[in-house]
Length: 133
Image 1 (tube, one colour):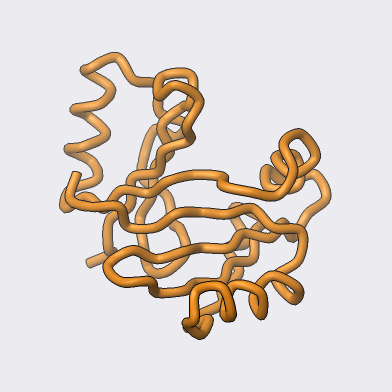
Image 2 (cartoon, helix red, strand yellow; image 1 turned 180 degrees about the vertical axis):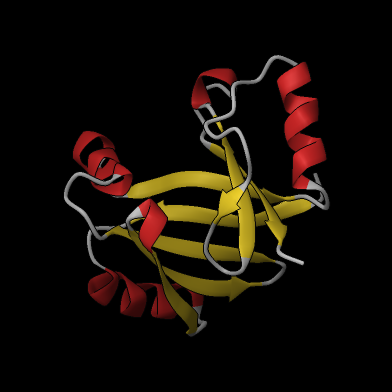
């Protein structure tokens, strides 16, 4: 793994949270995007070498809605950048980790992504992400 690529934060409303984070981070939101397959709207902020990704559910039954129902707004996942997502997925599978998807899938910000089950990572949802070629 190369670096902490971003930290994902579940929020109820991007309309409320974007201005708050712009002031908090002293940085503008540089990109918003909807990922239909994940039923999520995202907003990105650059803070040094690491990004912050706000996640708002676009579906009341979506994973972010369920997360907020259960735990409230807050840190949802930590994403690590990788250079070869398929090799990293294979390495983790062989080490006994459970992956939440069998193949990389399309994520936000032009990334291929895969999630590692939090039962293997002391309760932390870990995302692997690789820039799409």
